[in-house]
Image (cartoon, rainbow, N blue to C red; front, top):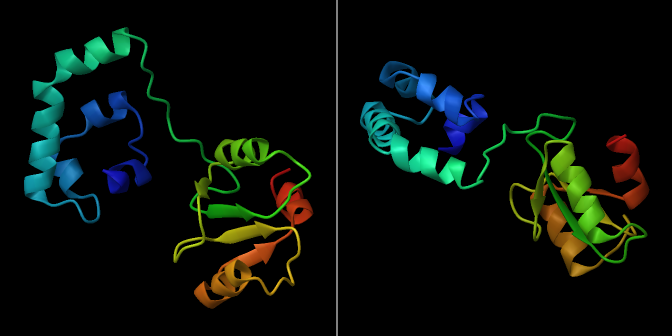
Length: 139
């Protein structure tokens, strides 16, 4: 499903508008899977409407400076962690709980740190940046 959303089909209206053929064209999304998603949306339209009517809202994915990037935080920050995470979301990025293979940036108080987390990030190709660099990047 992530591949469908990554192609810009990030609202229910956009999903309902897709044909099975269009779904099949999404990378990594073959004919069988496309048919199953299409049928599932149609067969559960009333349930989905009930969920929406109960107050659940599905918002379009935010696109911004951090779209496609994963950000992890470590150490002490001047800005509250939750606020930093909200900045990531508002800029279209994704917060990583820990450094992993797909982490783009590790925001750390000392970019020259030799901590095990910093070393692991470097081995994985993650760029280490300071809080100030992160904030400047997202302005």
